[in-house]
Length: 216
Length: 39
Image 1 (cartoon, rainbow over the protein chains, first blue to last red):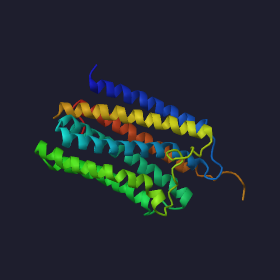
Image 2 (image 1 turned 135 degrees about the horizontal axis):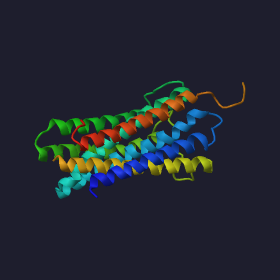
Image 3 (image 1 turned 60 degrees about the vertical axis):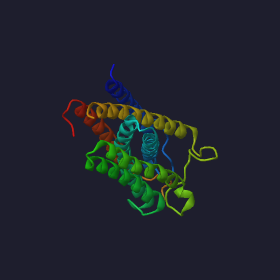
Image 4 (image 1 turned 60 degrees about the horizontal axis):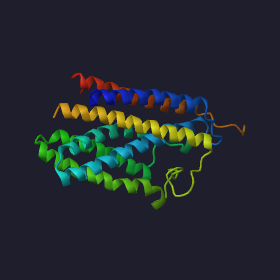
């Protein structure tokens, strides 16, 4: 079995599991009293944000490894992870405003968390534009690695922005020092969704990496 | 005030549909690209 077909199988399984998350979230997870059905957007928005940040984190780590070890596999992995991260960022930036409109009364506000996540999306786009603009492979990999490391540096600011600045965005309810502040049934749905989005990341990146290897 | 949860299911439905469309579209793009058809 080739790497590409392994990736396709992982993606297929993850998409089936995502359908299961839809059923669990919509039919078997209670509706939150204050926010109503819109709160259920959270089961897609938070895991997609996680996958986008995982993508950017691994782009940064792979970029450092490429610059240190000069192994082009790290550059290829970073390129794959950046493309996949763009997709998850798009999910995050679509579901976020769809939650914000009924809850905050506005689609978007320029607070620190939202602005920094938009910057991450633009970094993903910029990373790919840079790669397509530089034709010499060695130079392209080095320039792209610098952008990838900038993305890695951005991640702690995104995560801590809700503590460092006064923002409208809710603070973390799972990834925080104290215990998660969610009822168990909602927490299980969220954690399962985290797992499925992570698996989807693995499936997409495995496929994209295999395509990158064939077309180098 | 009726005491029940707010009626905002349309936003939830839109978010769930948009997520499925984006993720499935990308999965299809990857398969097409593998076959040499995609962008």
